Image (tube, rainbow, N blue to C red; front, side, top):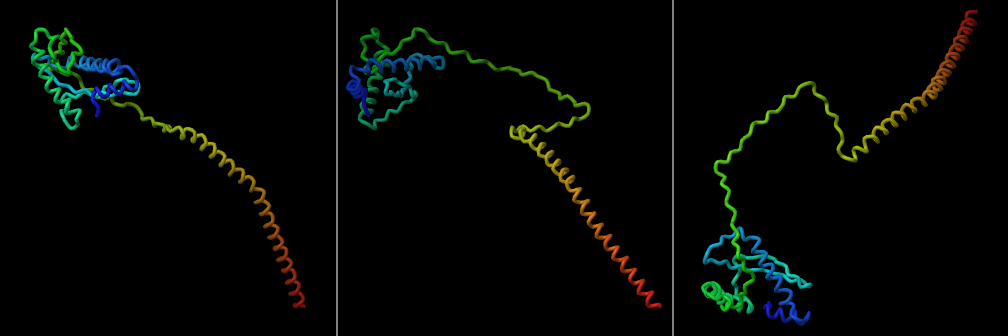
Amino acid sequence: MWSCEEFSDYLSEEFGDDPFQTLIWPQIKKYVKASLQSVQDKMDNRKNSFEFFGYDFMVDTDLRVWLIEVNASPSMDMGTPVTARLVQNVLVDLCKVIIDYAGAKNKREVDTGGFCLVYRSGVEVQRPQAVNLQGIIVEGKKIEQKKKTGTKVKKQIVPTNRKELYREPVRKEKKQESEQRVEQQRFDLQPAKIKNLEEQLEKYLEKEKNVDKMIDEINDLHKQVSK
C-alpha cells in the first residue's frame, strides 16, 4: 500500500510535474463537495456535531478520478504501516478540528494537521417537512360487471404463432391436392375395371358354350343307345 506522498512521487516520475496536486487532488475535492451537497437535505444540521466519512476513490490510466463509495463509519484498522501512521495522525488531527478550530476566533491561523477546508456554505438547506398522513381517506365505489346478453358467438381460433399462420394455407393446399389426386386415380381406374369385367364375361360365355356343347353330345349318345 502506498501513501499519498509515494503515489504523488510515482506520478511525477511517470508524467512529470506534479499530476497529483494539479489533476487528481482537485477532482477529489470536487467529488467530495458534490457528494455532500447531493444529500444535504437528508442530514440533520445539529450544532456542535460532526460526522466522519471515509471516501474510496479510483484513478484510471488517464488520471481521471472515480468515486467508488462513501462509508459513514470508515475502518480504523492499523494492519499496514501506511494505515497505522494514517489512523494515528487522523485521531490527533481530528481533535484539532473539532476543538481548536471550532473555538478559535481567527480560524485561518489554527493548525488542522492533515485536514483542509474543501468548501464552506453560507446557506443552510432546510429539510422538507414530513407529510402528515393522518386522516387520509380513500373513497371509491364497486365496479359492477355488466351482464352479457344475446347469443354466444363462437370465437374463431386464430393461430398467433407466425409459423402457424404460414402453415395453415399450406395445409389447405395440400389437402386439396390430395383430394384431386384420389379423384383422378378413381377416374383412371374405371377403364381398367371395365376391361377386366369384359374379360371375365367372355370367359363365362365361353364356359357356357362348352356346357351347351357337352349337353348336345350327351343327348346324341342317349339317342344312339335307345336305338
